[in-house]
Amino acid sequence: MRLLHTSDWHLGRSLETVSLAEPQRAFLAWLTELVRERNIDAVLVCGDVYDRAIPSVEAVRLLEQALVSLVPECPVILISGNHDSAPRLGYGRDLLSAVGVHVRSSVEDLDTPVEVVDAAGATVLVYGLPYLEPEVVRTALSADKSHAAVLTAAMDRVRADLAARRSRADASSQPLPPAVVMAHAFITGGEPSDSERDVSVGGIADAPASVFAGVDYVALGHLHGPQEVSAEPVARYSGTPLAYSFSEESHVKSVTIVDVDTTGAVTIETVPTPVPRGLKKLTGDLVDLLDDPSLADYEAHWVWADLTDTRRPEDAMDRVRSRFPHAIQLTWQPRVAGRPLAAVDVRIDPTTADPVDVVLSFIEHVTSTPPTDEEDQLARESVERVRIAEGAE
Image (cartoon, rainbow, N blue to C red; front, side, top):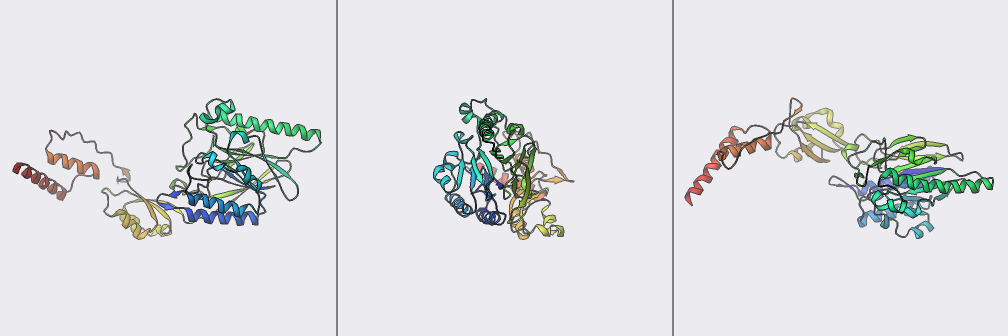
């Protein structure tokens, strides 16, 4: 049995100010070709299908196009993530199931697996555990208010269903099919990224991989970096297909192909996804970034320019884009000898201090450097003009 594990598509998302609709469309077209070429038996999408609970029309249309392309190749199983609206994603689930799209977005479906059958007649049971917000589902699951507790209660239902199936299989001298669980959760040991939404509301955010004991593979969603978090059972995050923040610039984005044999043994292969353009955070004085020949490889990247000039350069973004046309983020953190300047702590009472001193202290505060002679002169002239104007009233 060959499964393709992917997650966290975040359809409708942007990277800073850049729409990712076209890169997402390109990924989904590539995914369909991969499914066809590699004879995939089912596609598992492990939550955060959309980037927001009420997705844009464009994002909904993009998912529809992807499903229309994928379903002729194999079944598709989706679970809802913490970014998705579970009721919206699950709307029409019975109708969708009839054509090969199986949505698991509610507590009621936890112990109802999708039985995936390959061309040779082998079966794998795929259980879907959507994102389980403890405050919302703990009563239905009779669980305490923590992520570990609700996941354990959900898996207890899965294990109970497997036990019942094992009993029936033993009675008929048939082997129990391997079992796969899809889950959207933060599992202990996983490495997070800046672009993930915090799920700590509702108790401790993470849960141990041991809650999944009793199955053969755990297809995880939520963390954006591809990574394995457990060897027994094998539990893995496929990660996002695209980078959604500069914290992910070192990620090699991929999907995971999972081969499961009749004994439950699992073999993993990662396949890199197409990258529209790389991400790079560049740090230094503006003139250095514009002149450094070693940075030529990043001129086609999406760039974050973190400027270290002691004074904020004028027209900084336009000047950055003169060399790096795809720069999309700019910050200014002045440094001296490579070390951040200390915040200026000026204790001055504007009601009693000389107005010129107030203006000059403000200039020093916002520039992190003493006022220039020109700024000093302009401040004095401005204050003097105000005094003259007040005296004339």
